[in-house]
Length: 171
Image (cartoon, rainbow, N blue to C red; front, side):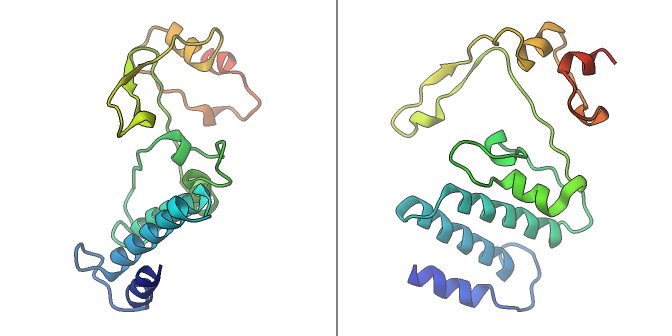
């Protein structure tokens, strides 16, 4: 903690910044803060939400500085980028970014009804694959899969809640 605190005090002070890697003190500030928080959540008492807040701060720094004025696409797992929290998270990156950017932010989700995925929760002990189970009857995935469209975009913003998926797809 002493080393990361010292690095933070040196890199995160107000100073000229090119916002260009590898010479950007602001970028290195974000890296050190993220590593510091990751250490606190891994080896200390900090909650996972602390990491999520740092992830959001990293995205905000990128949007505000090197990508200012540009459209940004952030790809990630719904546990991190979705609006709302998941078990074990008081705050996630998506809910924190939604608090900051509100309606300027749009989240697109994707789903899969067939196939397998790397069982990441067993890594690094195993590189086993997990077969994706069949969709539960009546679930969102089941309804979308029944449409037999290999690619489908549903803009759920078009109809305010509460709306069922079925009534939205009828439009």
